Each structure stands twice: as structure tokens, then as C-alpha cells.
Image (cartoon, rainbow, N blue to C red):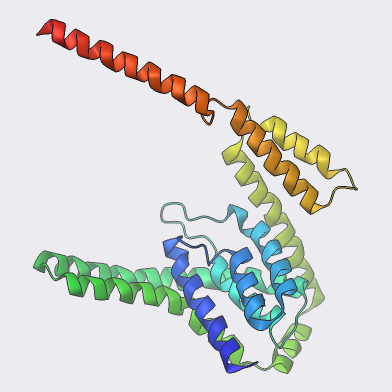
Length: 270
């Protein structure tokens, strides 16, 4: 791999680490991180395939309160490097590696956030002093730690040769890799169930079952399904008063009348 490729992958890893707390550009999402690594290494197809599979697994991963979810960023970047990089592991092997990497990343996340607590207290002192510049430096330091949380482990994996990685993978018993693959498939089902549970409403259930019915039509490819999905979304928006411009105008005039009536009542009281 060229030096530019290595720099790009490390940059992607750094951005993915920061996005784990920022959630601004979603670089930590598997479909984004794996695709970017695939582009950087010139193996886009494998990156997209791995990212799509890992995205299904991570659908239900979220931080709730003090509970830290497994780290999708570390799992995505490192597994994408092993699949798209010189090691050329299969997508199935990448998925099997991603799950324990996510658990390891979870521990790193807890460690970094514990360190950041001390920086926050230092920032509180800077705020009491009115030292804005110091607060900015502390903020950037904490954010950089989040980026290094992914970039440093990725760099360590990049130092390993392809033969070493292949030998390590071959030394893992099949019963373990197969078990991880099966576990990953079960996590996909749990992720879907959690997402459906959050978005389940009486208005959306018919569209959900229509999608299942259309998926059984073998002549429809993913592009056709996507077009149908977009059309259904537009139809739903046109039929829903919330998104209907005419209904919005009528609602606006109605709210204006009520405001005018309220003003009249206040004038009468005066």
C-alpha cells in the first residue's frame, strides 16, 4: 500500500473516532467508514459489502444514559482495512473480526471518556477564569483523544503484514468464526426489532407489510425497490395533513383567526 493510502485510512479512522461523539457527518457508521476505506484502498465493492452487513448489525446499537454501546467505529475501520487492504480477508471473516473489535472499542471508549472527565473539570476552571482560549484547547484535546482512540489501534493493525493476519485468521477454530457469524446474524434481527419498535405506528404498519410483499417479487431488483419506496414516501407525505401545503395554509389561517379573536377579547377587557 502507498503512503497516501495509509494516510487516508488513518485520517478516516481519526474522523470516525471523533464522530463517535459528534454525530455530525456519521463517519463512524459502518456503511460510511467501510466505504471510505474501500475507496482509499481501491477496493470499493468489498468496502460497501462489508459496510452494509455491519450496518445491519449495528442498527440497534446506541448509547442510553451511562450505558456505552459497542464501538462501531473501531470495528468498521479495522475490519474494512483487513478486508479491503493487503490482507484481502473475506467479508465473512471481516464480520467475524468486527464483533470482538466492537467490544474492545467499547472498553477504549469508556477509558477515553473517563480521562475526558478530568479535562471537563479543568475546562470548568478555565470558564470560571474567563479564559476562552484555554477552554477551546481543552475541547480540541478531548476531541483529539476520541480520534486517536480509533486511529492508533488502526495503525497497529496496519503494521501487521498480510501473511501474519492470514496466519492469525487460519489459527482461529472454525467453530469460533462460525459462531461469531451466527451471532452477528442474530444481532441483525435484534437491531431490526429495536428499530421497528421505535417507529411502529398504525399509519406505518401497512407500508411495512407492503414492503415485505414486494420483496417476494423476484423480478424486482434493489433499484426498483428503491424507486417504489421513494414513491410510497411521496404518496404518504401528500396524504398526510402535516406535510400537505394546502392543509398547512388552512391551519395557518385558522391559527390567525384565533389570534385575532384573542386580541379582540383583550381589547374588550380593557
